[in-house]
Image 1 (cartoon, rainbow, N blue to C red):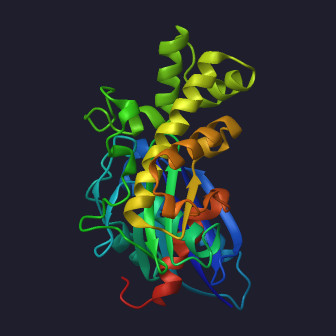
Image 2: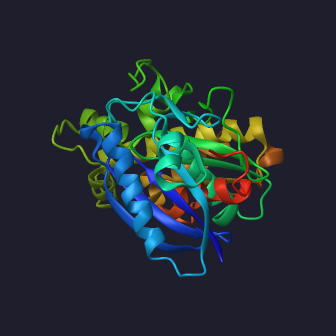
Length: 311
């Protein structure tokens, strides 16, 4: 049996799985990401976890390589992190592919973690069988990817999919995490939804989006308005993207996808207010693979390539 290692490397947690060609996760291992200890410690953790899942594989399993979905902007051709946030200090400039290839003695491919998530859903999740898949992930931030014929469109510099940094009417004037203002992420992310709730309610103690959702479901009008605003703003942007890209399906994932029917209803209303009538039948569906999506997508990079052209 052929399989590949898939790695979901985030700022707080690193998860590794052994994945078959059909997208089945045979084994998993995870650990906190030692971000504060520097890139070397982060990659040591990946190596340790990868060796653990390889060691637990059946004797007839052929491990063809290691795919990594990593936080930050990734130069996939070189396997290098070109830009990263402070959640992983010193991460920018890290040669992820070369280090892991040398340590694991396997071919290695590296992409952005959200791109890996989208690829997993497109190939083996809610987008399976579709030619063009638009993935949107809304949680701490807002991102996503376009997957065409099983390949992620990463863009010239690997930045494609930063949908949270497009303009949004609902976010007008609101400061964004990127330093700009009026971007979707400033109103449609989990932290932004909390900020809107604090402004509306005057309660400065709410810092968790789940609490806003809980209060909304309990009938709190400020919670309901905050959840609906986040959902509608995201939906309007999705509607515009549907008009521009005409995908076969739109998959919505991330932490806010669990925000309940109020959020989903607002999102669908937002989509319908923007998309062309000809595209009214474009499916808008929830993600299917959960926490395994990025692992499955990262492994698929290696499985698709068959080890060719990888370090």
